[in-house]
Image (cartoon, rainbow, N blue to C red; front, side, top):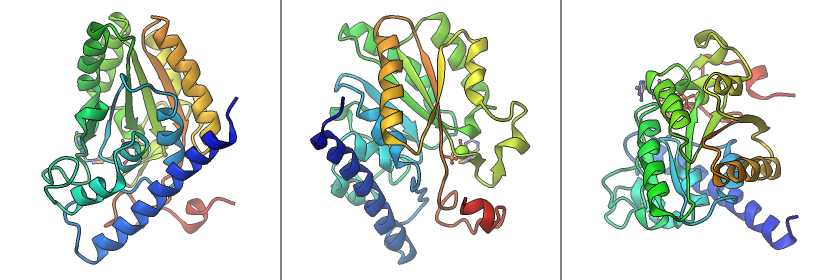
Length: 260
Ligand SMILES: Cc1ncc(C[n+]2csc(CCOP(=O)(O)OP(=O)(O)O)c2C)c(N)n1
Ligand SMILES: [Mg+2]
């Protein structure tokens, strides 16, 4: 059961991510923030619900849409904002920017810009977690665009064969940049079924509901901590804004964009 204080804590984190990102989008438009900026607006419940189920010894590794995971892991929003501004006081010393948020003191292993590039690294972290003997694991986040990448399949295979403590979290927002999943992915919907072939247990969850996400994550983590190897969780979600703030979104209609 979750108490009132914990519920407020989840809401606070979701609201903080939303406000911080709205502000960063505004500052990008004013030319204060350079480089790429990919907002997580609409998907906040996934990072908050999953990370609420973790322990400090667990590693978090994610993609370039990483502000939400960083905040949910406890990295202060001002050091994230400083990073977006390229300041030395930023969490990556101002050298990483939006896509490369890091904080080793919180086992937060990035922020990775190569689509799927974080998956093989997650395997290494999982081996480190195993060797440390603290019964920790890895939460590895990625988008639907990763499903067709070679390293995804190699990582799923090795994680299963080696029974590594990894929770693969697919943030399925249906789009990889401007391409709808049905157009570029032969498997279509229910992507979690891909885990069956690798003999990895899996689940599908409403990624817009923080409590459902937290509950599904707890089940997945229990399985991992019991030594049963990796788990695959598909969180169904929706990217409210464009791929990056520079995206005019001409590929999706208003009706599709604002569901009834
Ligand atoms: C290996 C590689 N190929 C292409 C790109 C260009 N690229 C950046 S983001 C992206 C789309 C990824 O979509 P998805 O994984 O669904 O994540 P989302 O942006 O929806 O969160 C692409 C193709 C890249 N960064 N790396
Ligand atoms: Mg996507």
